[in-house]
Image (cartoon, rainbow, N blue to C red):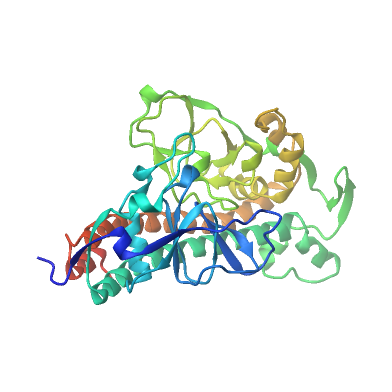
Length: 405
């Protein structure tokens, strides 16, 4: 028996209200997050709710999804937001609401919709505040670890992109040698790989002995068909919905279980590129072998030593602008392998791309390792969450399972 736990309802646990209208033209860039049905959706200059706060998707595809804001925020009209926690821990409320599967309470027809009056009657068992605090602290510790791993991956990618831009876009090592200086941040052996001047090319001034080519010169599109009946159910699956914006770290994935239409195989270290116009910014580095949606192009370096060069070009603003300009289609404009393969790039001698790949691959391997660690922590959190919230598992046992210090 859980001492101090009380029987209540959702309406007796928190009070909810529909969010506030805010059109795109009314939204002014500021430091206040706008929280919608799918979570943060840009920034604004004004807050309508105090943090910490919790919002629940009220309409659309994200109905029932629960999000948390540590700071003051603007709750959008696509969500319900908590106006009063009635003395309960806000973070605990955030975790508890996740366990209720609120999407099942859809009261709409053509457009999914969540009615607060309908869900207020959901029965709950609620622990006393001190136990709420402890449960929330433990689950938050897991969330913080996961967030740190993802932030680390973002930093690793930013470093790789900065180095790529320095070597292959701004040509900083060449410019330094042209001025009689030692290139910054590299040893003598690496610096010796770069020339000390430029020559003219169809793309303007490029380093001496480098040539102009295309992305198709350094990668291929294998298009290996994957028929559902031949795919093991536990095979990792990536659709556009699994690919984060502006990040090569593919931290989440589905599985092949239940898939019916044809897909494409990809291998570890392949680059996945969303080919629909709204998703050209979705470019990921495959951490394992798997299958992907046919709305994703698979780019495979012609040699392993070109991985870093291909991955950074594929995620560059220049390629996104190129594919956006050439994309076509009335209902859903899309790019093609032909468009990507024709993208012009400046190609260095092999030894330069090999040197860059040595640095970039070290970053990529750390990204892969962090993805695995975050996935393990996520499984632990998702396993413990409903059992802790329901009282089936007590804190000492949960802490032992999570191996928290």
